Length: 198
Image (cartoon, rainbow, N blue to C red; front, top):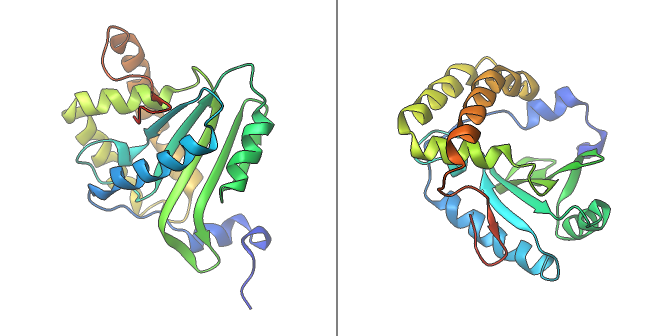
């Protein structure tokens, strides 16, 4: 009988769910939009911003086939109340801080499901990932640099997600700062409010 995910060590989880990258897949946007519709229903009585973030939201680069979604809620809303709604929609809470929570869907005792999602719950304005996404999509050469970095790290960090993320940190934070300084004049920053998927 296999262990439940909650019983596995971090090392066992990393073995079961390795990092792997694939060429860009146009279906990722469809997966996001389907999930977006469900989240809209979930938060129908709350003003939220929902955004497609992460590498699957950057055009024409290799990425882990995992859809990252950012949900921003107003400061006056209770994060624990939002958490309850998300968990009831099939997500598992993986990390919890006073102003940030992370959830996963599509992780099973037998490995990845056919569709996998990471949901990041934040308060409005905590959205650096949106700026990074938009900058990469407007600057294909920078996006290809990012792809090259990811591909160079893939095999070394296949079973070490923290190491993989840390190795990309300098690149991501550098371009995010550049994006914040250049993007304020317009463009597609800020993920869609309900009814406006981004």
